Image (cartoon, rainbow, N blue to C red; front, side, top):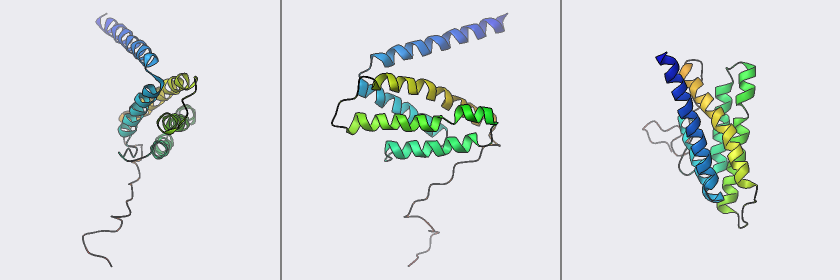
Length: 161
């Protein structure tokens, strides 16, 4: 009985959290909304061990996250991978909105905020499920490929001419 009560309470709290977050996001100005969603995407990228470097452009980050999503969905069953793999495209679409919001001389379209919220609604669940899968099956998932830097490639402490 206590377990059922706890699960119901947890479910209601989760639903309330999602509803309050949706209302909060709906009230934000369009540019701020897109910046908040991109920051959330960036945090998910770090959790999934995608290359989330400070100086990356939104497009570079979205490509890096897309590659990581491909790595994580590769060993999964086809039905699950088919459901989660659109996260790469959705991340790219959100990055496009970020670039438009930050760098375009034109104002965002009237549809941009609703498009961003819709993208995030789908993308956040996909990324959450990917993150949970990395916690449940850490041995089946390949680690991310190391990021090569031109200035340290091949450097082992000796001077090369």
